Each structure stands twice: as C-alpha cells, then as structure tokens.
Image 1: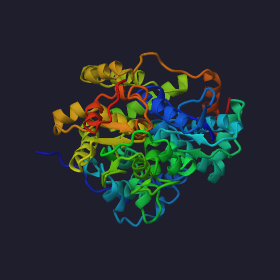
Image 2: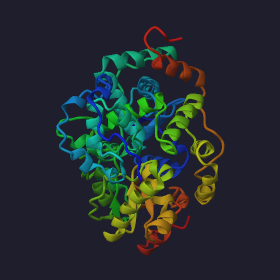
Image 3: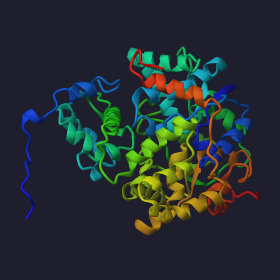
Length: 196
Length: 292
C-alpha cells in the first residue's frame, strides 16, 4: 500500500518572499502578470516529458511554492529555445524565469538526484572560470566522472567519430588573461562593496 | 566590408567545418573578418544556469574587447549570437546589472560603452553583401539539390533582429540564390534538443529525430543549419536515432558549405569531410560532388 501523504499544502507552507525574489531578477519582472492561459506549455516541445508543465512552474513560483519549483525536473529539461517566451501574451520571459530557478536550485543544492544537467552546468561554469573557454572533450569526461563513469563507454563511438573527423581534441583550450577574467567574474558576483 | 569576428568555442572544436566554410565564403565575397584578441567563452546556456550577473559579465568582456575595433561583431554560433545580443540589451536596460558588469570589467581593466552591433553571418550575407552579389559569384549552381532550411531557435528567438521568429525565410532566399531547391520545412525553428541529446538522450535524441524524419518526408537531400550545436545533434546522433527511434538518414551541412560549393570551392576546403553522416553521395547524386 502506498504511504499516506499530505497532497494539498496549507497556505502557511508557502514562502511568501519567493515570488518577489524571483521577480526582482532582471528579465523576470512580469512573473506576477501570468493569467494561466497555458500557451507556454503548448509552445514547449519538451513539456510532454516534464513533471510540471511550464504553466504550472510559473503558478508554483508565483504562489511561493518554492520547494516544488526548485526541485522539479522541468527547469532542467528547458533547452532555452524561447518558444514560450515569444508566444506569451503577457510578455513573461519564461525562459529567464527558468534560468532564475536553476540558479537558485544550484545555490541551494536542491536539484533532482541523478540528473546530469545541473552537474554539466556546474562543470561548465568551473571550466570557463579556470580557462576562459570550454573544451567539449574535457567537459564530457568531467561530467561522466561525476555522474556515471560507465556511461562513458556508450559515448566511445561518438568520440571516435569526432576524433576521426578532426573535430575533437584532448588539449584544453585556454585564453591568455585567465587571472583578469577570474577577477572580472569575482567582482561581478560579489555584492556591492565586497569585491576583492 | 570589414567585421570583427567572434568565433566561439564550438567553431574551434566540433564546429570547425563551420569556420572553414564561413571564412572561405567570406573571402570569395570580399568580406574581411578580424578575430578579436583573447576572446572568451560566451557562457552559452550553462553559465546562466549557475550565476546571473557573472554570466552577463563573462559575455560583456567580449563586447569590451570588440568595441575598440569599431566594426560590427560577427558571431556565427547561435548560442554566442544570442548571448552577446542579450547581454548588450540587458546592460542597457537594467541599471543594477549594468553596474555589476561595469564593476567586473573594471576589475579586469576593461570598459564597454554599449556601441557594438552583434550580427549573424546570415544577416551579413543577405543584408550587407546582398543576394545579387552572392548570385554573381555562383559558378556551380546547386541545381536540383533539395535542401531543408533549418534555423533552430536562438538566432531568431527571442529577438528576431533580422528575420521572423517562428517562420524565418532569409536562409531560404540565400540558398535559392545559390541555385538550390528549398523544400517547405515547417519545423525550421523547432529545437534540436540542445544539450539534452547528451544529458537526457531519451528526450534530446527524440527531438533530433523529429527534425530528420520531417526533412526526409519533405524530400530533402540535405538539411542546412546555421548553428554548430544543431549541426552536432543532427549529424552525430543518427546512429543512436537508428537504434532507439527509426533508421532515417539525411546528411546535415552548414549553409556556408552549400554556398561554398556553389562558389566552386572543394568539399575538403569547406570541411565537408568532417561530417559523420557524409553528404558526398547526396551531392554526387545531383552531380555536385567535388574531387577533393
């Protein structure tokens, strides 16, 4: 028998500040004006695979259901194709809201277990912070190292094909001014006055 | 005609053939590209999944490096093109963000005044060079070659600076100027799967399959793309698509490779030998294959 669980939330369980914090991020300002028409979900190619459709993610975020919004798979399945954003009749930039939720989920370390997309995003972030450029082969190796190293065998054929056609190298690309770039990123991330 | 050039990471790696064909087509048309010194990754979709203002600052460094050249900045990769254009707009419209980006640039001894115009090569070819000038350089028209014009998402969305956001036509016109037969392709701006092909193949590979299946159904000999990630997904996963969805094979090439063929360049000089699903047989069937 399935364990009995609370399926409907009390109003008091919502985070009253969550919607305001998300809407304060540049590009997310129109979040409160959603009238739940569902055009975003219809425009989305991936919504058939999502645990919450984009319309529902917007409703959860706007109502302060922070846990559901941050822990869902939907935000990580968004490919940033902007189909929802250009169709939204209220000009809500849904793709940007998805980015804001991803940033918050990573900051609070609440992304779904076993999902490699947030791992990829963080490995990409680290690689670019270190070298200023992204090298696909390095990124893929790091990703599988952190998720499922055996899965890399399934990529062997693709890797060989890319090597054969001269499209992959194991030499990590880098810019010259990596120190300057790191200072730049640090200063942009720091709250005012905290920049080192 | 002179432009600053931002290649982006993919054009130096998996999308090498895009750079090779772009440079040779631009050379033929007398368009000069000046690669900006020590450019960095644009951040693509991953960096902005981790940090917001740092993602904009990362992209802004490239704008700051390009600005002193006083030329429009050409970005061929769809992700780079969008990130640079978006960054430019965001720091103009959001003072708080602008202040953070400014602070970041300053820490690296840079500044950006907001004067760089970001351009995609398709825009440059149609609106600056012009279809007549392109036609004048055609030596070997792509007679009878049926092409599915695939634009993907980020060049036309959300900003649609030079073409329609769901039903663009400029690549259609350009390929017709090169003599190709452009087929009706209603999926032309649907997503290729992005990075989901690698991270969630059950979702991503399916999206790529839809696009290839539709191209086949429409009678396309090849699919033309203008983005290195679209090209990667449509070219590199066809064996996986055959295993998990359906055996359907259509070669995918860059629009610049087709243009280069029409200008009389060899397959090798255009990087066509780098395809995993070779376009050679499809080209040969229309008597367009070249020796090298």
